[in-house]
Length: 69
Image 1: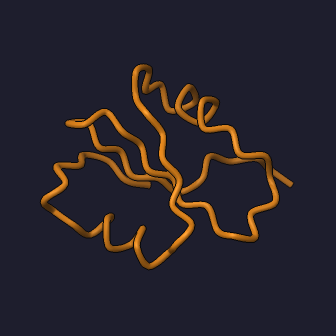
Image 2: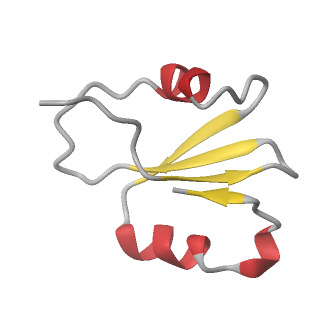
């Protein structure tokens, strides 16, 4: 199985990265590694387990986000 950084939203204004991890995610959770892979040094990482809330955040224009994957 190929490793890949989970879906995420980058909030540059608050220097946060929100990762979506489903409840049945089987790979190790390593937020620091993911932030390093994204080259976002100095950012904090958060995990959301609800796909519905993640999608709401992804579509919320008031968050001042620049990037989402």
